Length: 224
Image (tube, rainbow, N blue to C red; front, side, top):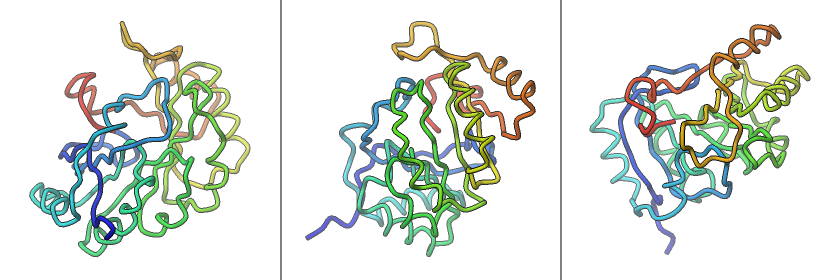
């Protein structure tokens, strides 16, 4: 018999730290497992392990928070077969649901039921495979596309994608990947101010963002 649930790394209540809904209380449901290994990943602890939880147990934790927004993240949440039925259950319960995905697996089935945040991997991530191309047709105008920018060359790569007019969402997010002192990451790093200045210089119609939760509670704070 198939397991009616998900493999969960953690569930927590916090403010959304990114996207156009930054600052709004969310419940974060972090699923275990990812098929990518990005240079700047700050949630590598979710690659393995986790706890098998049935849908009702997950819902019970969500209900206790009183939040109306739920984000399914990872890892990569769309790798688990239970994600789609759980997504539909959340919608039936009246929650506003977002999914953060790297875009390298199909979003077709999930797109009608959630706000998709598609994190298109830049060359500096080490995982720029181009799989997002097949998913662009499934994105809705109200979905969001995110680029984590590790260097000026990453910025130019993402800028050219924006300018080619093929990205269908109203919101396009640029986030600086700032390399912390002693960080093991193999990316170059780009200061937030430098990214902001590049966006202004090029008059690029995107939303600059930093990770609000890390500004509020410190660089080791969990969140997305």
